[in-house]
Image 1 (cartoon, rainbow, N blue to C red):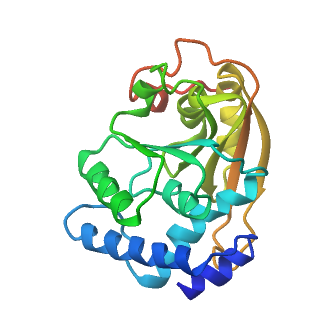
Image 2 (cartoon, helix red, strand yellow):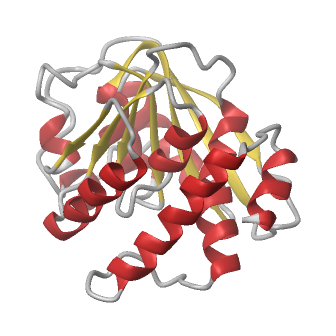
Length: 238
């Protein structure tokens, strides 16, 4: 995990030997499970270190204060990205992994057990449904998502989970100018305010990656998010 270690230091994340061992175990479990469950198309050792683990840790660049017992939700986590890499680094956070696919949640169960991670909850349901559950609605300080949907839909899905004063961090890459413009209405309606588009300046990730950071400033109206699939099909567009 030397490439991950050195690149993470550029983000101000200094991985311990124990954490590097956890990432090594994560890699082995990911590759083993990927033979029977479609978790990732990236399987080479360097690729997983940089395009999965390092990419997940870029979220740390947007998090100013990691307080004890901070609550984080990872929407559409898939193979646990970015949530589990962030949990490995910030062990005190309480993490909810939201993933609707049974085979993927079975992998997450096994991975969390192998890594001996505490205060991690796996929720096997569509995020649009979970967001109406009072146990999870507006309960999280930080909500993250990676490669799940276009920004107008993401705003509708993520912001209902976020408490007022918290923020949503969506990982994106490429030219997202049009996406950002189209998302302004959805962000406003869901009670958010676009804070920043933070570019990720790392030679190891040279494909124009960025973090879209949205602050939660007022409650999300109760009808949102709409039922599963609708935010994608009929986004709230400016």
